[in-house]
Length: 122
Image (tube, rainbow, N blue to C red; front, side, top):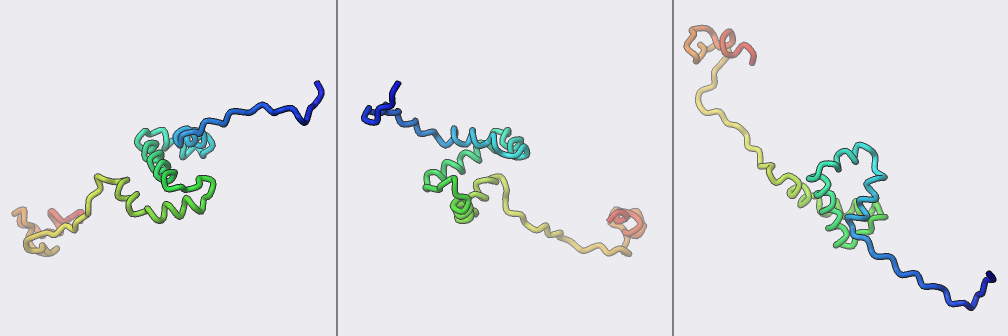
């Protein structure tokens, strides 16, 4: 067959745009094994996918590490809050009542000093 420069080229149909999930599933295969193991957990994978969807909606270019880091830094507080909904504010424990000294009688009533009775392992 002879090459004809005037022949109309066959139009290749444009590729279907892949969803972010399909793109990420392909990219997951290129990750180190430690990350792959963590992404086997459905909760972790869904969290990873939801963050990626949000980044895509905000127009982050996934080929630019700088843009992804910038987006993560801007949304760090809300991502932390979403990541641990069961984590509550930690309050300091305050003991009420008199403080027991090492040489005071043990409150259990044994008659021994606290340091020789209930306070041995403290």
